Image (cartoon, rainbow, N blue to C red):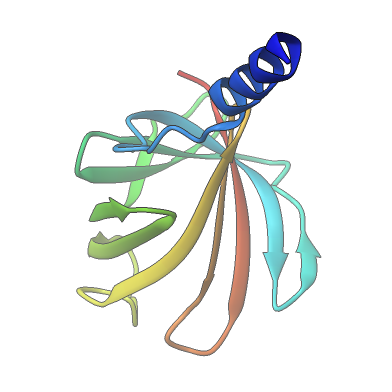
Length: 131
């Protein structure tokens, strides 16, 4: 009986999900899906997102070039939901100041964002923590 209780205790201790309060850190885009079609990460450049507790900045990095900020915004987390609002875009954007809802999961060092954009496109993005 003690072994059973101990096993249940270990199972509950190690399987319980800790509530994520922030994505704080630097994450690199590793590909995903766009409308259920695989979409590989670009080969000629890297995309990174730097998150603080409540904001993010997205950068395009090319070898030998200065990092280029292409997007900024705010985000909030609640349970397994993330709400992002783009507040800056280097290019014209239909997402500017629009709240976009994502379901998220963090598996090991990978952030997975699933959502439906206002255009109707369904996305699944993979971001690997690099810092």
